[in-house]
Image 1 (cartoon, helix red, strand yellow):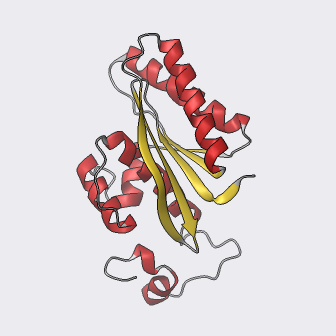
Image 2 (cartoon, one colour):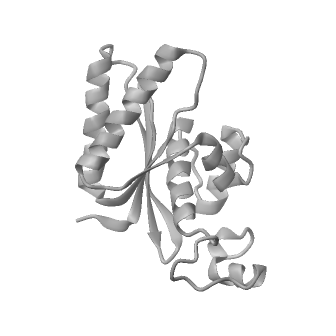
Length: 189
């Protein structure tokens, strides 16, 4: 049974795939899991794709996320790398779709903008903001894991955007926003 308050975030990669699960309880996001799937030891690309699909399917079976957010590949100069990344993204999306979970894709710039307020922030700046927002002490070994977490948090923010008013009470100003979203304002709880 899917749980609408759990978001599975994926940072796709054919050598290292980041994944994170975020639980949102009464508007407050909490990290359930943040890690990477290491695939560099597997030489066959098709076996890597199989392992990516299996890992995403396993996370879905264990945590029953209600939504799936994935970072879109950015366009680089190496066409072969882009193809591999696109395939990795595709099998992760296929696993979510197979489980009937809605998929949302975010550009790296959108994710960074959502977390830090700066679409050109570096990975360390994103991580520092995640630490502050989610009160995380220990830094993971790979930024791919924190990238996946930032995608999940971006998805939460997009779903609870103050710009969306469908059925929600409209905000009358900054003071009203801080009262309704204390976890999104630095220095308040």
